[in-house]
Image (cartoon, rainbow, N blue to C red; front, side, top):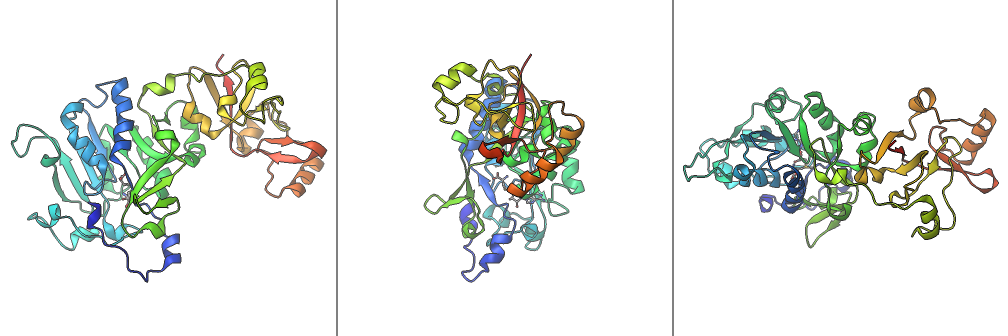
Length: 389
Ligand SMILES: C[S@@+](CC[C@H](N)C(=O)[O-])C[C@H]1O[C@@H](n2cnc3c(N)ncnc32)[C@H](O)[C@@H]1O
């Protein structure tokens, strides 16, 4: 439990703390419940007979373990496995204290508690009270520190059907690839920046991975350990002890209803007449100079009747309905632009040099607009989409 953590020593080195890779953000129970309910609503048997692995989750801290243990029977799970990462291997160790649950167990070991990961399993009514729940969790130390990449946690991955967690933010890419490699179903928390990673984006384009139901209004609030606020890069609220991130999302390859609901959109003419965005209303849509496509700076301003290619913000992915649009690719990928894209036209070398002078970060493969006086305006982070034929 969180109160087991002691505040950090006052003289701890702040700059060192800031540069440490803080992965200690704990997901709130209500957020887990809200997300998982979307899958259950869509398919009440989605977890029935399945083995679920929670690979970054010590039940002392993680609501994932509590949530799935409490719902073990309702979901019809076959087995729940939860593993934790040794405190000595964590970047932020913030006053770790083993829980009473662990110290009062005959298996408690004061060295192992710091350097070994732990495994918790649930598959039967061990206390004979007639139900399987959180009270029946069995635990032991792992042989190693619980690193998800270790052989022993990888073997647990292979044994399981579905992997669910909020993984370490700093290792998100490795974590997702670790799951994909084993071809497992998953529901995990990530961030919007990761959606355009070269390893992740093709999976999204090909409908192998998509965004989950999502956080309330796109804001995610995580609990942090007491004293770790100096390690935090998001917005920290002292009163609630929660840190807010605006760019978090759930990623999954399990079906939930929301992604099949098409966006309600206006036609191009309607947008130009009625759009709430001053950039569109009475103005219209600009064309990129280097791509034969229009720029649509807001997802809700996508014109429903436009047949050509459109560049839309990454946040579109949260509203992406595969029956409504095709994802073509992401802007800014040089290799794709040069070799595969049939609507990319680079400017002449002289122009390029001029644009580069205007804006040192300018890159030819990023979609850009030409403003008055031939000034370039790079439009970062666009995804090219087209209405489903
Ligand atoms: C973002 S936190 C989330 C914790 C928990 N899953 C939750 O949502 O409440 C990620 C957790 O992964 C742990 N972690 C960091 N590196 C890890 C690794 N290589 N293998 C397993 N866990 C790791 C961190 O110590 C941290 O507790």
